[in-house]
Image (cartoon, rainbow, N blue to C red; front, side, top):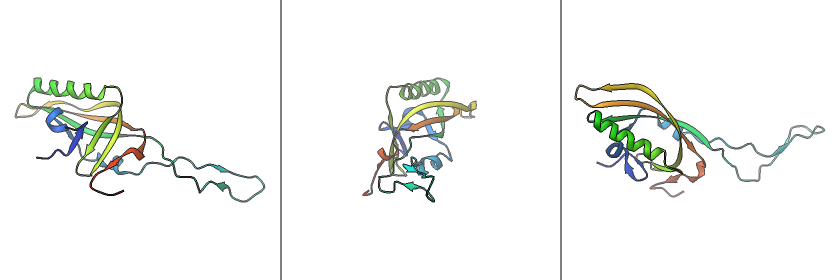
Length: 149
């Protein structure tokens, strides 16, 4: 089975028991916001003079994705949990590859909130949901796969 999501080249499901939950694509697929263009509003003229010749620049952005970490049992859950948060807390950015979209983003971890308390499933597995806050410092640094851009 091919990995749907990878962090620094590692399958999120196999390494961390991590699944990305529904609705997480919306913010990732939304275009970045442009920076305000240089302009001057002369008091003795109608309208404004706007720089339309310079390349458009984009703001960094912070967005959230919802994840679920699942372990086969309590000990397995804590191993995966610890490994994931160690990865997030390393200095620098990490690469998030989303195979089904054909895109890799370079992100910084900004924080997380537990959104669903730990629960044991009938199979004995343990699952906890989180909302991750991630910063994309430069949206133009995305890598697109299988297309010529």
